[in-house]
Image (tube, rainbow, N blue to C red):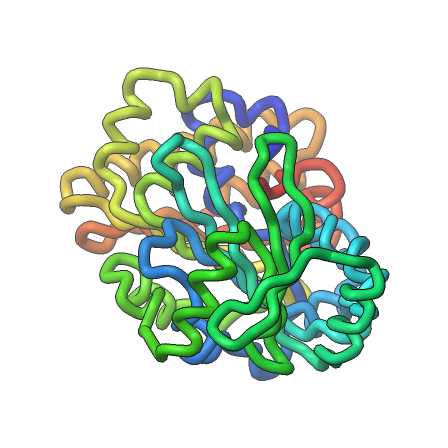
Length: 329
């Protein structure tokens, strides 16, 4: 993940970065939801779960920027490779969800589910014609998709005809096993599963993160700020984070941070307010309209939660998307 605007590389700016953590998409009248049957496929130990309503994103004039900023690079690479297998993501994929897991070695493993209109038999025929190694797992055929520079193997399979699974091979195998046994999977995640209710069906893009991944996002977006001693205290007192966004004539984005108690939430709220003010001051000369919008950002504490909300005009959204969005891991 790359840095945001250079002025965010300071302590106060890191909360603004998280307030706009999820990119912006034009929402339909009724946003698509991630069904429980799909949620259950993801591992219960996932530290981050994200969603993108691809059908709606394609209707946005900012689709290309959103796509390249929000979709993980492994999945963008898959989109190109999958054409040889008869999979056209632009025409066939309707929605995409993915999870990240921390590994004991300190790395990360990704597992994704793309839902749409696929023809598994065509994919199988082309995979065999390309001589891709295959294996049978829980009654499904898994095809190898190579490995990254660290030696992590990737694979694809169909959980059913409408669900294309891709990710680290061991995670794909585990997902297929969960699907065949009916194991609840992510629905057993006591921290993040309840947060899904807050965002599912309420936005075209959203994400939920546990403490480790919320802190990691802050470190990746604003590493200089994250290395300050006071940041470590806030990291240790975060429990989870939720982010979502919608775009009508204006942008409305929000982020919620769950802290260990009300006193920590009060501290976080104060730092967030200072962060908006600092970033607004930094933008005052070059972009006064953006500075005015940042000054109007709302920070509210509700018990052990801190709610951040930000509204931008269409022109401000265009500026932000063009110059300030991070790219995802």
